[in-house]
Image (cartoon, rainbow, N blue to C red; front, side):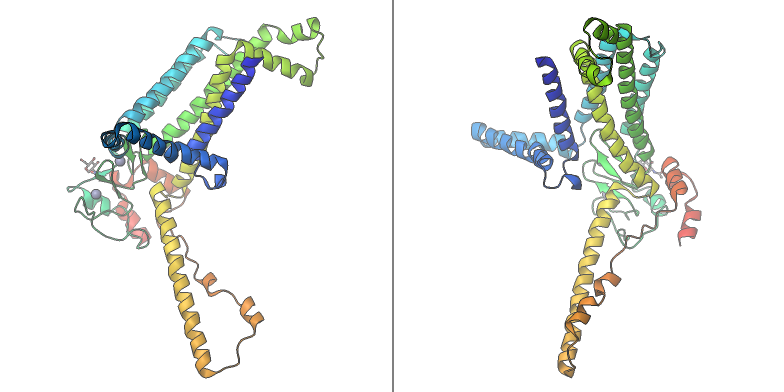
Length: 391
Ligand SMILES: *[C@@H]1O[C@H](CO)[C@@H](O)[C@H](O)[C@H]1NC(C)=O
Ligand SMILES: [Zn+2]
Ligand SMILES: [Zn+2]
């Protein structure tokens, strides 16, 4: 009896920690305890730890922590890469040891012993490809080539020099502070891959995301099929109805079946829960990036647009209030009868007409946007055509 509740609690706590750690800053969790857990996990706990170390070891301890933090978070390092390999290795290991002796089963063919190796192998291959591929490094010799690929939109990109690299920064590029280099069509620096995601490896990154989503769903479904087969082969339903006199209806059988599963196959159930949670997260992440690819936007640009629009809005507000001040001063000096309050109330706000809009000049329709991800512009000679079309 106790084991099941332990398992359920374990599942819930894992879900809560993973979700709040990874998604706690999402707007839907604003002001909820998920956000509070996120803050504790990301800053709070670390802050307490720092204070604790400072209390015990003094300044020396604090300095040690700071240099470790610098090494882990501000420099390229393979820690998260090792963690990824450990997670995928351990998960596959537990699946093999706990479930392979049921393959082939009633609902699952023997081929999945080999198919699963291939599927995991492809996943690791995509990981290595993303980690060690060229994200589109811009350097002194070839920056002009990248400059000619994308025009400056004069909104979020204006022509200027990278203060570190000392060359003209191509539109859509960013200087990665961790890797200390400029990267074309910079998306983000991915700690898991220990590499920047840019013009030339976004394709591998997105392939990695969707493949790992498929991998998790595949694993969860395969284990579910194994368990369904076990249920059938061990004739649990028959025993429950014939020998224990339980009603042959879903409602009365389900709790007993669940209890039987949790008692006899707890490892498999745990793996399934884990895979289901990870596949949900990957689905969300993949959906986000698929949307970015379709609209030809980078993660970096979503931040830039956010900043740009709120800056524009402030400028417009200032301009509108200046106009209002000017016109009321004019009214005062002309001593016109004041406008009716109602009329002012129903008048369209001047802000509405000048609401800043996001005008993404790089968005050229789904098909071309996606083909640009698959065949980066800098590695094909089509950018002249691109330039003439977009002006
Ligand atoms: C520019 O040079 C870097 C570093 O050698 C290289 O990784 C990148 O692919 C080059 N880009 C182009 C367009 O040749
Ligand atoms: Zn730079
Ligand atoms: Zn980087």
